Length: 322
Image (cartoon, rainbow, N blue to C red):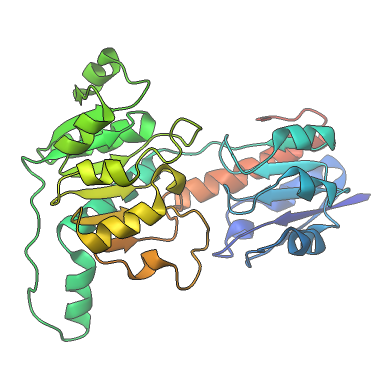
């Protein structure tokens, strides 16, 4: 029996092998030796050394980039599977040139929408500060929370995730406004929100501004110094989309200089976030280590469908190709 080698990269929680029945691959007449790697590799050389023997790789979202130079260092690679059906960190043209089939999996938009509200509520009610004080015998009630009911939720983007966030805001009794380059009056009316006529109008009107657009040439650096200064000094900015949409240096300055009341983020330009990064100690910043999609249901879907992708490839009929 032919033996192929498969590695799951960046399995931080060491759960990939328990989330799916990888033994099912043996039914296809090809042995597949699967191993899980928990450590994040920070260089292409380290990746190539760790998985250079593999014909199959499974990657988690955009944790490890796959540019053309890395494909050139992995001549044995034949199948690359990513969680989700988009991965901007994979050079698909380079994969095709090197004869590598790239497949994806389904991914739910519910978990990141839920995490967005964890950040919003955490900021509004000073949850981390108060919980820390409670655990450390600190002051009892040291902050005054911000109300959400009757305030305005300003959404930059009203796609699948943005629409879910909007509906929760409406349930809280918030006035919801949205804007993006592609947003139409019809889409806004469908969700029951007001469409802002410009990004500036959205930022000036929002008590909570939440980012839900895709990263592209049009959205990279969309919120910079001028945009942050247009926000209310009592407003908070939340980003669970992509870090590059918000100028990180400008955000750090906005927090230190009090242009805005606070910010929450689940995404960073470099992940894991380097030690000593200024956002780690920025005032009124609530950061999480990119947990938006990290839930049991999503992980089970990712790895079970990864097994399906491998089985289909071995059978000669790849599915969910990118």
